[in-house]
Length: 230
Length: 112
Image (cartoon, rainbow over all chains, first blue to last red; front, side):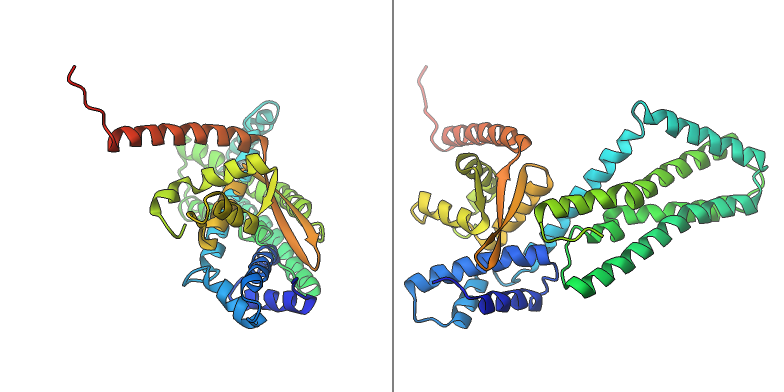
């Protein structure tokens, strides 16, 4: 006997009640529970839907779906990091390396040109952090609006705005700001380090905010045809 | 894996090999297939299966396809080219492991 539409809806609600907020994972777990309930009914046809559901859920262990959720987040975090590094490495291969090196020297010459003016350095660093933060803020707002409309969240889509482990890269410009912005006696090593770090952070922000989001959305859309790319 | 810790390290290899033989499968189907092949000796638990599948997927060894099955969605997993190569490598590793374990637990002494 196959589960009815109402029973499937009940299973979706059940997964949400057990802290599975993402539609992609909910769908997989709902299909698993549904298959198992149908299998249970073959041998124990007298069990009610609720009894069979609980019997099936117990097979996930004492932590229920939590373990599956945590491990999936970990796996997707790794997938996200892999995508970032893949794009990042591109900037160190021909022809993009020409752009990367040019950017490095442009920063180096610019800070010399402005004579390490603390206001200019401060503005550069605020810009470096500010643009991606604004972009992420706008994207998160759009995601929330889309969720209100569709009631569907996708786990990998959240990495577009939470950036996984790469969120910690945002701390680097702040550290430079603390140590460099007020410093008037720049050594050559300081200049090189500043330009190098500025370029690396800039590339990582550009990749995470501009290059990766459409790619991640395309990956989700390929797997979930009902996913709306906005 | 409910019935033996010995199988735990081989779960991913079991999944890869099943997908090599069956083109595409969904989670529940994998648990049932393993149970059927081993006559119920080996039971893959839900709490171990999905993390393993998601890890293999994130590593690029599996591709997914979601289709409508009646009134619900079904997620099928299939091997990527990279997954096929990985399966071969892991099977070789597993066979080596089994061979070495057999030598360890059943040594043949010789007087030579």
